[in-house]
Image (tube, rainbow, N blue to C red; front, side, top):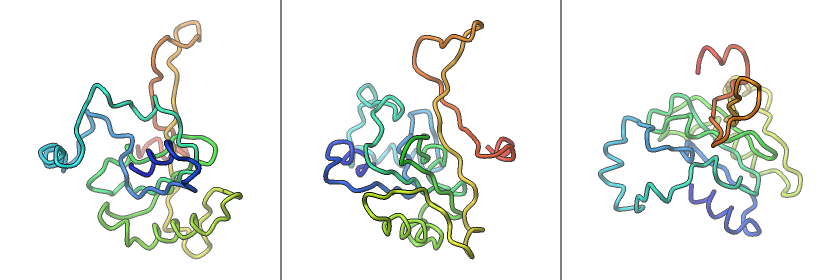
Length: 174
């Protein structure tokens, strides 16, 4: 999450951002198995100012390429909170594994290595290498959806967000 903020503040000094199970889309109502523990200890790390925290979708996009590696079997962070919105030079890579295991997860390491090996001026979306494609489920993307009134016009106010599955099969699994 710090990398995303640093990239927003100093895009000239950040080549790209790669997150591993980072819940940057966390909202106060999101709960995990560790929420109570985190809330009791959070004052040691970051002051919590709910009125001053902007929702990720109300912020400017990170101005450098962003890759979000996440797992639906994370067990700590809600995977919905770890996925990037649709947009240029933004992608999500889903892997199988646990939150604490992402740093040593073979598929995550393949993805991170691939991202780091790209030339700085030639970003391209991740494509799993042959032989390990089965380690990468088809990811989903977070996209804003504007509510429409009966006439089909956008309703005033903030956009309502929905998870956009990558395939019809994903609709059943979200």
